[in-house]
Image (cartoon, rainbow, N blue to C red):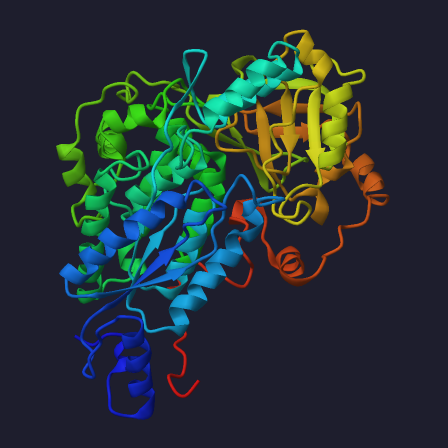
Length: 571
């Protein structure tokens, strides 16, 4: 077996000798004839990211698995993209993580990689980088955090905080109870315990064949993670030894299975962007309409917040992602190979029968499906709504626009309210991929305080931003093209009538083309590019329907990622 790493370590010249010395100094027992797969452990554990902190405890068993299978494990750090503390948004740095990992793998003697990641953008960012090298890769996640209890009730991460914040803003939740909620939420590490973005990306990774079946719902700190890490370590060596590659692991059928699973879960709208970007790195383009088509055919069958009522621990007890795969049956391509080497069909055959929170497809949580894609003069390239987490009565709505441009104006108008009618459409523009920058999760625009006080809990909202996967409401997101690159959303003014019909696929402002063209002549200037990485990001990021990747990194359809090998000589 010839290994990529042999180019560094095999031979008797000074370069090979120096490579072996460097590896041995770090504890890696390499030989002059090579032959043992060198496996990277890309570790994103960080004290600044509580979602990823538990990953530090899994390096040891992962290393044991690699070495038991005859490989050599080499741990190295990666950026840790934590959703809570990185501002303006971790999404701004997803592509930077992808570039970092791609270059770390390309430039060093590694034959395969196991990614340790968990929080929302950590998973797609790292996998995008690994995909671009076409090296075999697997994923280990930390798992959902413990469930807090507040006033005797379980609290779902994110989802129930947003509800509590509305109650506080409306005067229902006082200072003491607000502090008690904070104390309740500060109880442990791990990812959001709702069907947010981290949970959605973990499930997607299982369907793609990158995460061990059943692993991504296991709670953080659960002893099962230790055995899973060992098994993953053994498996990555087997993949390297068999000549596997990212493109042989993740096929177009696997991508479609993952998109189907996302719809069945009622998963995060962010995962629509991430899966599109990940597949784009492999030359497997995913059209935005795919998520609409699948959602109309595949109902939501998992009753988890924010679409439903349960939490991730409930899904784990019901059998995890394999139980959902089983419930979907022939909707999925059963020949797709999963991370443990079994086919999807084989995993389905061993999955438990559906039980709460998993339902059968003929007894769904939401027969209408998870997502809709809408178009019109406000979003000629498309926008997305999470239909299953919206208010049914607002899915076909016409109302006057209340326009906010940027975060500060959004906060100001939500606090004062002004004359906002109960049929208003809240519009937030200028906060997309370029405008944000990074397309922050500001799309769940706060309901103006005066309306909250009257009991209003949802309005139609339209934005070129994203929203948290734990969010809910009648929110049209990812409007493309965004305002900052000339999109019509930036031309909307207070009082303009907006018509949004999710099921009909319509999002439009009731203005003539001539009026829009006239307004375009006086649009505000585009945001300054800034410096350094932010400048690069603004100049090269694509729009949401293309996954917000960089235009120089996504592949054309049908192309295979090719690792541009470095010259292995004196440094």
